[in-house]
Image (cartoon, rainbow over all chains, first blue to last red; front, side, top):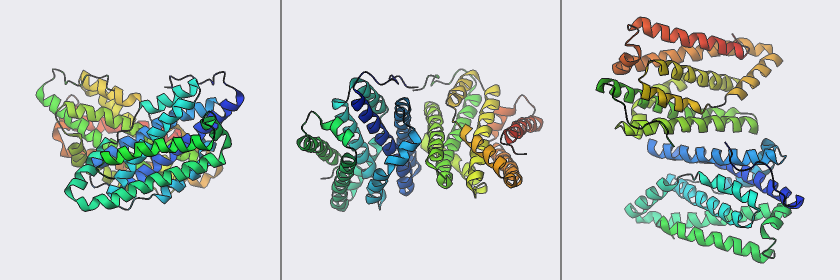
Length: 225
Length: 225
């Protein structure tokens, strides 16, 4: 199934170790996202929405399988990796539990986009073999297009939804950045891997600025913000 | 994504109509199975089991996508098809709601096997193009192997589980056959398609006998029955 090489390349041991740990963290994120997406789809008002959510969830499992193969090949156990790193993702999801179907849709769309941006930013700073893995994870994009259509239609129909959903979108970004920073603070090797060239704190700030800029565009696509 | 032809072949209109309806029914079954599997996985005691369930669920969505492409190409709306045919599957699942994790595992393993047998029996009586679709649905087998390992280990460890899980397995088969017969009774075209050559009631009886025989082997694989 995997077309990317399962063998780490000739990068230094420290780099390989950090990439492995990064993949283990991302693996836990995909696991957590799968079950949360299904949980949060319970408010879906119709079968078409449930089908769309199921397809997004299936694509998380595709990402999970690509990362799990890498984590195994690099000597870690995927199950143990999920157990070790899932808590920060579970906390993010607990802090952003949607109260309405539209909040769920905004979260699905924004979360999907943030994950994609995050993977894209990563791809720029990782060694070549790890970039290939990220490209493979990204090749099956989960279609959150349906979420955008539903949200823009709803906001057009009922403009009073706009202000609370805009605040909700800001909160999602804030919590995502906060929780990502917790990971970086706890996993120094990963931080060094990602920001070695960018001289620490300045690099971290630019990274999150880039993600915030993409988020703003995405909110605008939704007719929000 | 789909390598099978999306165009119905030159079979008669009646046959094409019946095949389309059959695919629409199967589509609803995959939809219902996806959400039930996730719901019933809540009793899973550990991350490894949750991962295995998520993979099974993702493979239901693969089956769903193959069938949805066919249903669309044959002129029906997949969402409307799910709405129209899901109730019998939802009723089957309501009648077989597991009360323990081991009941969930037996249901996952037995249900996966029954579905595979059903698809295999179908493939023998359908026109060539429809056989190709069924083969494509079956090509991504959901791995319910983990369920077998867990159940056999549990029954070995605690033989008192054997008798209630054996009864549970019999009940799953009985409910599956009952609900399948409801579909056949309601959808005469599908019944004619499947059993035209086998002279009605006798053909139906042989069909379910074949499925019951496979079920008995499967229960024996689980250390049950």
